Length: 227
Image 1 (cartoon, rainbow, N blue to C red):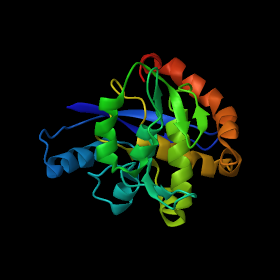
Image 2: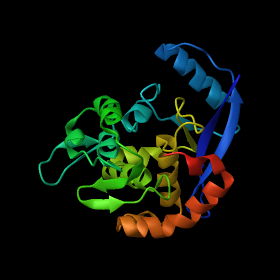
Image 3: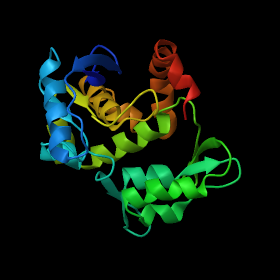
């Protein structure tokens, strides 16, 4: 047996309900094994429908919504940049970064490359000249994911049909940012009628969402020590 979270968008106010679910785990690296685990996770939940957001998803929507595939075009050069590449390339460490050249890499290349370029602790993010803090912890990743998702009208509209989202690979004991969480937050903002407000600017997003982030860190103390 294993435990994973399913992220359900709240409707009364912007936020995400994190539901821990115990389910049968199917070991192995094959995609078919991952998909068996995903099916078991979803079946064990007490609400539906649920969308797996990862390259292992059996639903094309989940694959498209993965941060490795979800992309935007830059205004200056019309380059296509994935959320993952933008996130990794925007990291600023104590003695290095950001790395805008990584925007042109594939998501897998960028994620692997950042390990080589990391010098010192993570101090923030810089995205096309705009600085973003490391706290709230998931602020920059959520902002980047939600803004990119909103640009794809068909995909973002389809996502709003779901009651929850999962990411079979995400381990909250080791990582902070989760694409399933960001997707759930997007849907919550839509249902609360606050999406337009948070999309006005990064500062507006931070101001509106900080109370939720602070409550989340109190509930999840381990998250405060992760980067």
